[in-house]
Image (cartoon, rainbow, N blue to C red; front, side, top):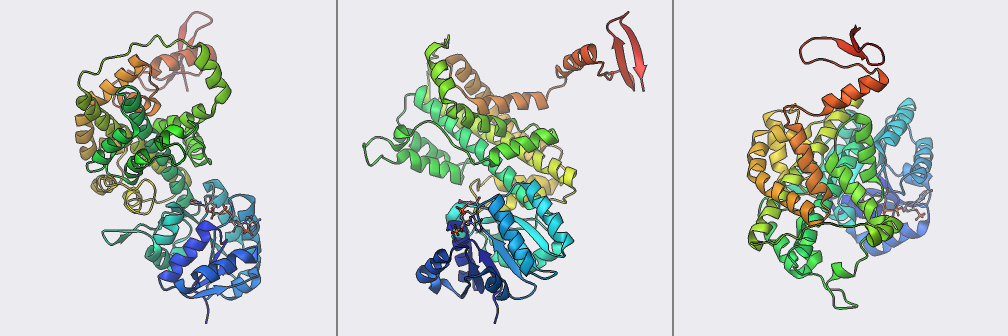
Length: 477
Ligand code: NDP
């Protein structure tokens, strides 16, 4: 009698994942570095299903059915490396090690290559949905070999969230593909959260609405195209009253947003790949701005606003504009995120089904939303769509939002309210649809000071102007 699968790391995420597996009828070996956590799981949740608890890693591995499959759910970074080493030393060829923590995809690629050398499968699996998701059904993004997915897939699909009876789990691609997609998921989450907050900010500052009133607006929006987990929880947060003061909860929170790094990874990777994920980048920087305490202190005191407080003649119209601007900014952020996944797939040789990524994000994860179906359909119409926004559904939808989006950004700029995601996504939109960009001038400057050459609109080849001599034009090969 042996376990179908094992989980090592019995903190919140690991214990919930193990319980989810057990509740779904799998025999689950469990282990934790310090025995106490394993005992707690057995004491409190032993009746969830069939567990095989072990005190040592050796016993844990021995309790697994071959080919063995063990999920690691420990602190990311060095602890993960340590546990991988320990496990690998005890495993045999063909066994599978899964890292379900939030690892940087380049670490996953490195670990996969090292374990492949030893005949082991290493699967980096993105798991989204926090502790609640881990227990009741997360969105799971596993990378690694097809062979390992054949063994793991049925189990992971069963414990994942389901939407319209379809699992929110699919094989993403080789080596680090799963963690890459999870990373971009988190980046999109940053953009989504920030733009929601910008809409809140304008309703609060420009319309003078209370948190509760704004909560009503979000609750209303959640019945339309914007329906999503993040809009839903925003309404709930805004309705919440602080127990200590009786004030709206959001008003007693220090206005500094923290980050654990996945947004920054998404932006750093996008910079390396040359993909403009401006919405995600601005959202990540917005958190950094909020945390720039001495700079804000200095700026608050001396920087003039010279703004003009615009009268809002029709608050209902303003709210309608905000809703449309929010939808448009969101579409751009998602489009940019999918561009990054496509670029990553190209760079690292992953065969990623972009439509399937939108499908497995419909449930379990933080960015779960109704409109993800529209993304899946867009990629079903054209699997190699060069720009998600250019799909007919999105062009039609965004057309309905553009005037409102421009009004909101213009209003915010004139009135002196920061809207980094609303405005950067609009600039991106206008750039990506432009007939001609001022990049021509940038390239000319580059040719001037660095002899970086340029290409012409009317002739093939590479050219350079001898700026320092007679401005002679030369053709370079
Ligand atoms: P933590 O990240 O807090 O990690 C605690 C666990 O790691 C404990 O089981 C601990 O064992 C173990 N551990 C730490 N160092 C070592 C080591 N050197 N050797 C062996 N074990 C070690 O746990 P979480 O459950 O919050 O998260 C687990 C993983 O899941 C992380 O990678 C996290 O990024 C990821 N994740 C978390 C989400 C969340 O919402 N929390 C969401 C999605 C992913 P011990 O008890 O012995 O100290």
